[in-house]
Amino acid sequence: MSGRGISGLGMPFLQYRVDLWCPGFETATASTMEDLSRGEGLCRAVRDYPGKIDCREALRLAAALTSEESSGSLASSADMRNHRIKVCGHIWQLISKVKTHKVRSFTIIPASWEYQADRLAEADPVAMIKALRAALYGRAAGQASGWLIAFVHSEHDPIGDVFRFHVHGIAYGGMIEVVDRLRTLPNYRSRLHLPDGSRSPVYRRVRRNRRRLRNLPTPITYLLQSFWPARAVISAAGSRYRVRRKGRIKEPRHSQVLMWLDKHRLEDLTLMIGLRATQNGLKQTKPVS
Image (cartoon, rainbow, N blue to C red; front, side):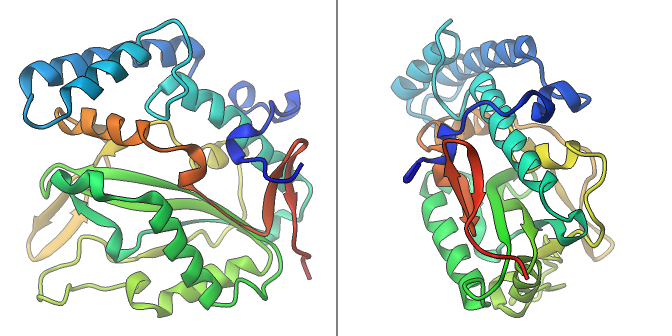
């Protein structure tokens, strides 16, 4: 079915329902409770940080998240759970049809995708995806076999008060080498120091798993996540490192994240090359040699 967006995918077959097979996958009850908590947080942010957020929009979103009806928003844990079940299930089904030794997961953290928290509203995921797609095609994605799918995600560094956007994805066939070749571009090159001489908060901009996927479907659910975490980058003894432990983003940044998510569609956060969404799931559009 031509023109179908990824948010329009149907429910996968039972054997690919990641919520049934993935330990720790969020339950419907947990997602509903999370939405109630998010709604309450938005109301508190309106009270405590009126100059930091659009109060009218925050209260509208709070009402939507605490309603018994689906909000249809990416800010909703319940709606994202539904997207995760469908999208991750269809990716799992897609992987089940190919040789898993030709499938690799990856994370890409472009240097230009870092925003001071007060500038979060300026972050345009459509422009980010467009730039990343252009970079991949500049490294012969058009001639490569296989496929690639990735989703925009972000985390908040409370020490630097910045949001670091990135994508989590999976590549198959010749697209694995295309991802590797991004490392030759300045925006994706590993750097120990920034141009001003300071330590870079991110050393490896392109991180590609060298081993085949294991313990499916757990690694697939990591591609599309229903929350943004807080993770500090700490400077110590002349080096910088990300703490291993993730936490909840504090207010008013968390409410700002929810309002940012509410303004975008799942299609805005999705990059697909060599794939298209159809009535029957994700279909490969390029051959694999």
